[in-house]
Image 1 (cartoon, rainbow, N blue to C red):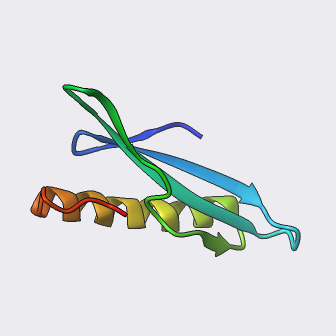
Image 2 (cartoon, rainbow, N blue to C red):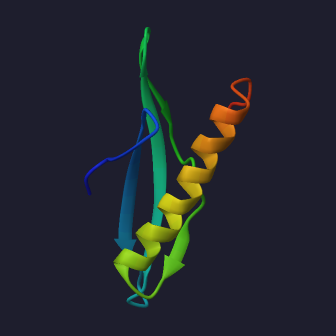
Length: 79
């Protein structure tokens, strides 16, 4: 899946089909900094939905909230 650009960050979604024919998706987020690319792996939890698009949309919505939180408080770092 392609990266999604949001407020200077890249959202990198990953989706996999589950054994029960549903879809599970999560997102990493990354941004370019002076020291290189800073990657927050597993920035979102897994979102399981009936379709790939629904799962990716849920994970990307969470990634957007994570980015907004980091922008609002730059001292916050994802664990």
